[in-house]
Image (cartoon, rainbow, N blue to C red; front, top):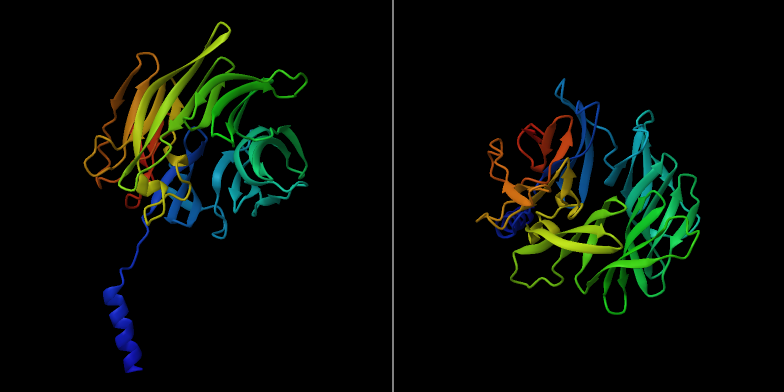
Length: 346
């Protein structure tokens, strides 16, 4: 027994104990910001969903710990939300104790970017065979193919009325396009509206049939790179032609995106630029000697960016992209004591 004790003490002295960084960030709000749902990441492999009542300052966990609620999306009727857990779509109604798991009648996996049309129907991209295709999903487990292209991955769909926009990537030469077509496929009128060549793009966000945004990124990271580079593009249709403009760029610490004890469970999702009113909020670490993420605001009217000074960030940790809840902005980031989020008046 004494020998085992000595061996145990030796191991503790010579093997570093890795402690995961904890994060919190908002994902939805209700009742004009009175109720805020937020993610609490406890480790690289585990997140939990919490509810914060800002009036009573009470917090409760609203999902069993066996679920990892990634990609949370509120249902259109505000009576519940969906999330992706271990590659499966689950729907949680607020009036029920447990989420419903949706099993589909086709073998799809890697479901991404759920967008709800109504409380029973959504669309998304998912992997079917060797490629990503676009699907319309129903909560009874049935599905319809929207777009399936040979030799291409189709991702990040956006439905505007009966228009469907999406990113297509050639699996042969990694060429990236933004495509426009009809959602109901009543006519074969697909057309490439923007060609990004070999610049990787993701997270298409259309705000109308004539305007949108998309995120580009540096393809290859060197071993010595401590940050990853991203570029935000504004897409505008003028007459019959589409134009794209790079409006700002930002850097994200690679430690948040790749393996390590600081890695985010949802990768870049909590760090995606967010459009609020006439501004785009984003985070950047390029002006910070310790690579901490700091918040910025890009004014769509003036075309200028400014850094936001958040005095409540006393611990000098990362701040994530804020969400507007009521008339306040709430920032996530490194877990800051007892308060789950940092408030910033607009």
